[in-house]
Picture 1 (spheres, rainbow, N blue to C red):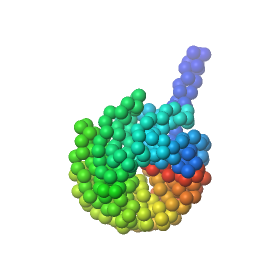
Picture 2 (cartoon, rainbow, N blue to C red; picture 1 turned 120 degrees about the horizontal axis):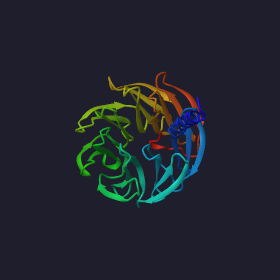
Picture 3 (cartoon, rainbow, N blue to C red; picture 1 turned 90 degrees about the vertical axis):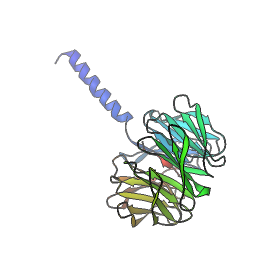
Picture 4 (cartoon, one colour; picture 1 turned 30 degrees about the horizontal axis):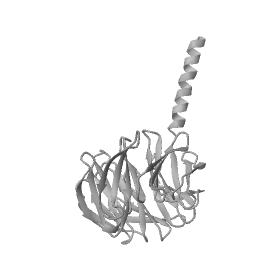
Length: 317
């Protein structure tokens, strides 16, 4: 092999390795009391960085298309933009009010911010972060999620006990459905068929048809359920129970609770590893993250993060 071919081969290998490094999965944990963002390498399951984020950070939305992470800051009048490769804060976007829930669309072109006090969802494009639209929803909008076909945005209106379904083409509300008391965290399955809502005050999870919001089931869980995530090809739903210090596990075929797993104090945010086999839980009171094996239903590791870990949203890249 001549020198030119050797150099080309080395270049290809280097680019391949660089791509893998950039694409490495990370969990971004907002620490509300400490005003920081902990970064966990979910391959090694180690905390590798801490980034200062002022404004009492709560919500997390990852945009893999732009290699960015958006952090809602209810006392910072908007959200912060993190460069996921450089691991640094690059921009603050003013929204006004008290931003809480935050999410991106499937193309990484728009970010949605729920304002707890103004009862609106603000829509920003993700190039210059120009405001595109504000949408009036129910009282105290909190958790949000987007359908896998990028057609619908679902918003939990906590004080109205309802969920709004927004058409992402017209930005109009297509449907609003009453569910349990104080819905907060939401998730939709990868087929876009079922929508799940954690209802804080009624201690249950609502299951809805994700297309027409028809109510399918109500499942009793632990005390003050906060957020939800799916794993194992949509077959298991995991629910954080704030006041029980547990995570409920629901069989999505039988729609029954099959286990409760003890985690850290006051678990809140929850998200699934890209391999669909491990669950990460942010424990607010303990300032830790518990890692659950979705098959064995056991905590396999606990990591120390920052004070007041919340990580409300899809926080794994």
